[in-house]
Length: 550
Image 1 (tube, rainbow, N blue to C red):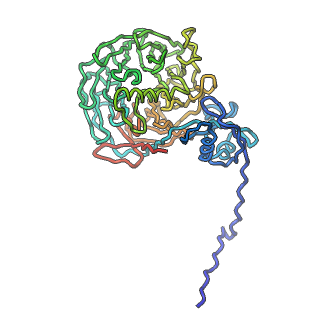
Image 2 (cartoon, rainbow, N blue to C red):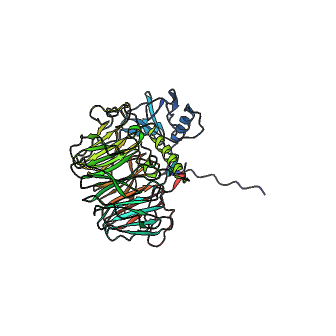
């Protein structure tokens, strides 16, 4: 029997009209592209002629082939094209990020600033070799504090979490067992700040009672008596960098009483006090640079000055008087590597103090090789200043003349509440009482003209933004606000990536290190979020931001 052929497929019609023939794809034009290094603007290779529709991933592979270095390591890159000054208006981004292709992102940009006849200068910024997946939901809550949570800090490895509250207690949480670990009782006033030493062996806390206390995180017991001396409350704490003193790092504390005190951890006694400020000292930072790389102390005060000190004896080195109102926040581009010491995404642990020092020094030097240690100060005068105080080109490096800022960062309409550098030191984000977050480019050299350049404004909060923190791969920034939300922002699009509601009141603190993020606030609860692959036990949630090797 002969095979029966299937019936002819019926032609699709639209309201009785046959389907119109598909338009042939438009030919993609060729463009001349010059790839340059974002740090110094140096060309990576001669200009090349490329089809404009080449995908971003192919551009990355091409740049890795064009590099003159002989190493075989594949480096992830981010690409962008700077917009002309007359093409960027107001708070609009000043650069075009290439996320799809040159044709889709640059030639098709609404500003129409570029055409296929232009030579496109594409800036290439190396990225971290791992990626962090954003948190998406909250499934539970950490409870225990009986008053608002004022500060929260992950340990350098991310294994422990310390929180301070108005109930006078410091609490430790074990993130491996998902259970409360210890309650540290000793303060008689609000706990305003907690700070881990870079090797995770000690925890320091400062409170409204003017006391600085040391704790053993393994046992939850205090290490000796409280270190007393401040006559008013303690505003911030800073540990001496690990690569400068691995065996017994000192601790600096600032206070409302206008002084900064440096304590010896071995004797738990005062080494010296810094008394140059005439009003409350709001922030203290311990940098790893300075003359001879011996470290330096930075302090910011309500007397409108930032002062720079030699940590070996307490000699005042500089006074920065450019702000017109209280200086409330400081940030170093080395903050992340100084805080995490020898620990990175590989999970390796040092075998000794010397090994830890060598690893920490290697991470620090890798960061400051292309850009020296930078300082940003933020003030209630609505502005920030970017400083490079110990670079070879700085007026203050040789000891002569008034220290001059690299640039003045303007744009906030109200007080600046917080500023933070990205872990790779290439970005800075500032938050203000104007509900906005502003991004700044800190990747270039002092002579390049890009250092401190405004990049974009992130808008979405409906209340003042109190606190900022960065993902470990420097691809996302996280913000906490008075509007009771935590938001994750994407640096590829300069837009909101994930909105994390859940808090019932203002969110005072947010922290992010390794693969976890935590937020706490006035509702007396912590929320630790994850991307949907985590586990839930009891009444606690983990917002795991999984680190995936690229």
